[in-house]
Amino acid sequence: MYFEEAVQYLLSLGHETLTIKLGLRNTELLLNALDNPERSFPAVQIAGTNGKGSTATMLDSMCRAAGIKSGLYTSPHLVSITERIKISGTEITREDFATCATVVRDVSEQLLRDKQIEALPTFFEQVTAIALLAFRKARIELAILETGLGGRLDSTTAANARLVAITPIAMDHEEYLGHTLASIAAEKAAIIRPGVSAVLATQPPEAFEVLIQRCEEVGVVPIFEDSAHLVEDTTSDGRFCVTFESKRHRYESIWLGLRGEHQVDNAAVAIRLAELLRIPPAAIVTGISTATHPGRLELIPPFLLDGAHNPAGCQSLRDYLDEFAPRPLTLIFGAMRDKRLDQIGEILFPIADLLILTTIDNPRSVSIEMLEPIASRLAKGRVVKTQSSIQALRVATEMTPSNGLICIAGSLYLIGEMRPRILNEGTEDDYST
Image (cartoon, rainbow, N blue to C red; front, top):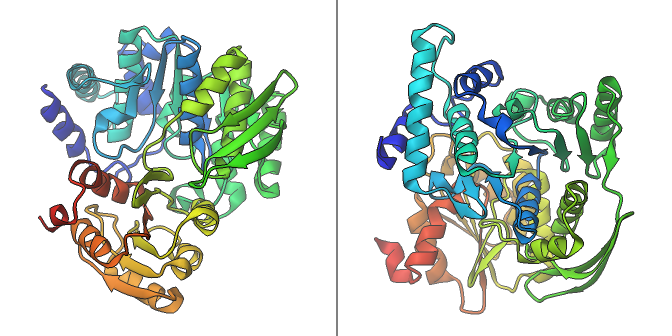
C-alpha cells in the first residue's frame, strides 16, 4: 500500500475510540504472527490519566540526549498518523509507515482467514503492531510506549515492558474503565506484573490504595516518585525553573521545556525512570529542558493550545491561565460528548471574557445544543456559537484585542483541526476559507 491507502485502510476499521475492543488476545496473536517484534528491544510503558504523554516525551528527550536510539509511541495524533511513531525524535516516514502497515494488514487478514481471530484487529491494535514492527526495523535500543486507554487490556501492554510507570490517575473514559476512581486505578494498575519495576507518581488516596494492593498481589516493590523539588523561578509565559533532588543526584536549576506547574511532577517521574535506565545526569537535564509536546500548553502567540479534556487536565489549564494568561481571554471550546462537560465548564467557562463554542469533525463531538445550556449557566463573559473550527478561528481573531490571548481547549482532536491553520496560514483572512 501507498501511505494514503494505508491511512484509508486503517480508518476503514472504524474510529479508534468508537470501535475500541479492549483485550490482548488479538494483539498477542498479531504480534506472534509478526515474529514478536516487541522482543527485539526493552520497553518502558507509561499509563495514567494525565501526564503520561508528557512524561513519555520527556523520557524520550533524555534518551536522545544520552545517545540512546529510542522509539516513542504515543496517541492520539494531531494531524498526521505518523506523529504517533517516532524514532530518535523523528516521525516515521510515510513510506516506512506504509510498508509496515501493509505487512500488518496482510498478517491480520491471514489470521482472519485461518479463523484464529473472529474479526480484524482494530485501528489501535494494528497501529500498535505497526509501531513495534517499525521499531524492530529501525533497530532501536529502547521503546517508550504511552498506554492508549486503561492498561489491563490496552494493546501496548502486550509488549510486556519490564519498566512501567503510572502517572496521576483521575476520572476519564468511565464508559470503558469504570465509574469510580478505584475501578479506573485497577485497570491502570494491571500493567504492574510480576517481575516489572514500577514507578508510581503521587496519587489520590483511593487510587494509591489500589496501586499498592496490586503491587502486593504480584510481588512488586513499588518505586515511589519521592524526589524533593524546589521551584526557583518562572518565565512570564509559564515555564518553570526547578531543582530536583533524588536519592541518586541533585539536578540544579533546570528550566523545563514544557509549560505549566503540573509538568514539575511529570518531570520528576521521568527523572526516576531515567535513573532506573542509568541515563547520565547531564542527559537528564538536557532532555527535560529541550522536550517539546505540541498541543499541551503550546504557545503560538496569540494562541495557546491545550488538549485538556477531563476535569483534572482542565484544572491544570485553569491554574496556568489564572497565573500567566494575559487578558482579555478568549476561549475556543469543543469537546467529545462523553466527557464530564458540566465539571469542565465549571472550571474553564467563568474565566473567559469571550467563550466561543464549536463542534469538531468527529463522530463523538458534542453538539452546540448540548454545550449551550452549560455555557449559559456558567459563562460570565460573552458566548458565541460557531459551527466549525474554521468559523471559530475567524470569530476569535476578529473579536479578540491585539493584547489578548486566544486559548483553544477541550480536545486534542480540536487542537488537531486548528493547529495546522494557525501554523501554516496565520492570518484572519485565511480562516474564512
